[in-house]
Length: 247
Image 1 (cartoon, rainbow, N blue to C red):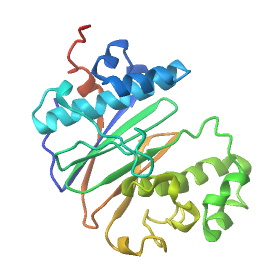
Image 2 (cartoon, helix red, strand yellow):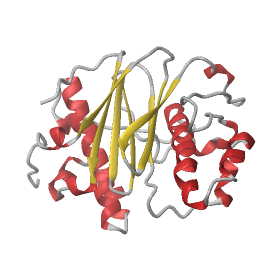
Image 3 (cartoon, rainbow, N blue to C red):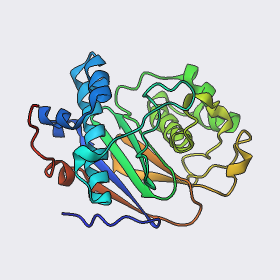
């Protein structure tokens, strides 16, 4: 088993595949999570949601020396109160972020500062110029002359960087992403400008992740200093999941 020590100098990112899903993983969901799980129409959406919840609870249980069933997540939206906000673990300094797309599911965990994780699948992407409104003018200018076949990967590199940042802050859909300038894919990931949040200048770091081919991903961390990022195989956690017993 991997060393589960986590501190302010380390971020763990647990990556799972949709093929890692098992029916028994839903046994760790609480009542609200079960309701959200059941509301998804497609089996793959239910599987992604259950995997994300399970990975958060299994990793948090190991970091906090608790049983997975003891980990309660608060997803209350700061705007409307509904349970679709960034997951929090009340009473602890453990910060987490969940992202999934296609067959890829990821959970980031860090101690003492917020994190934001985003991953997107390039294959089958149906976006195009109508979505370029989320880009700053200089970002869109790089995209326009590219062959159509190359545009999805470049656009999604911008997208995951921006999404990681607003997921870290918890601002989410409230932000005009065109105002969050993250630099071109050829440049190191960084928030070059965000007029709406001048308080964050120099207070966060942004990183491109390896993930796997066809799945660009990015991580934002609410601290500017260098942090060690470890990308880990979530099967090490899933294999430790306790058997579910119906109550």
